[in-house]
Amino acid sequence: MTIQPPAHANPAQSEPAQHGATAAHPQDVFIPGEPQDSAVVPDAEREGKGAIHLVHLYPREMSIYGDLGNTRALAARIRRHGYSPVVHQHHPGSAFPETVHLVVGGGGQDSGQVRVEADLEQISDRLRRLASDGTPMLMICGMYQLFGNAFITVEGKRLPGLGILDVTTQGNAKRMIGPVVLSTEFGDVVGYENHSGSTTLGDGQAPFGTVRAGFGNNGTDRTEGARTANVIGSYLHGPILPANPALADALIALAAERATGRPFEPAPQDDGFADEARTRQVRRLVKR
Image (cartoon, rainbow, N blue to C red):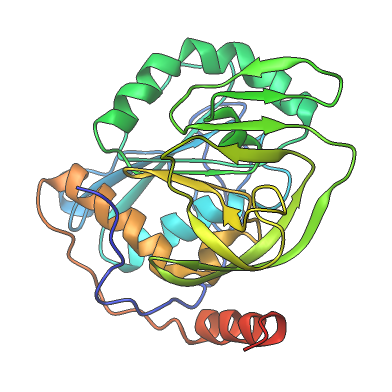
């Protein structure tokens, strides 16, 4: 199964923030609004429609532009659909979770990519197997680059990637910064890019979207991100998911099927604020 836009597509208001954070590991990063038991597997009578295990890769080193907001948005939205999120944070040197239904990763500086390189190699076979098996994944900015074939820093150091996405990134002195509007199979997707890496797609590699405003992968070919099966890479921060709930629900739908063995059972969502914010960005940036 590959990602398809969910038919119910209603975007979501934010839940009132709760105090606390996951406490499964001493290195875990505080996620505003997440309850203390987010990393605890619920017992059968408390899991609702099913427990969905969500893994955030390297939240300390690779989440510098608000990308933990994607994890928060997914966890909150999973709850609103009647499922129970189990939020794992994977840190360098820690054991990778046994049960995985959805994986996310964020952006980081070149130094952050260097710090996670050795651990990423250790878990690379597991990630490749999960990707091949159809596990939904969303990799933003620096993790998008590391899911490609290679990232070459400005100094010329070559960091080998996982090769899950057929992309290669060259670091540059000049940054590509600003708001973005994309056309994607999920409709208009908006966000904010801030990257110096210039990414080129390999022959036959599908982009995540087509740039209508902004730079995208490299500022020249109007591609943004990459998508292979259920793995999406993108430069869009924002974070991307709260403003684009149709994309969030597409990832959750795939994860729910993997977790329960049943089709996704969505609950109605009120996404009026997200819809309005996205529409305003499109109107402001795109000349029709």
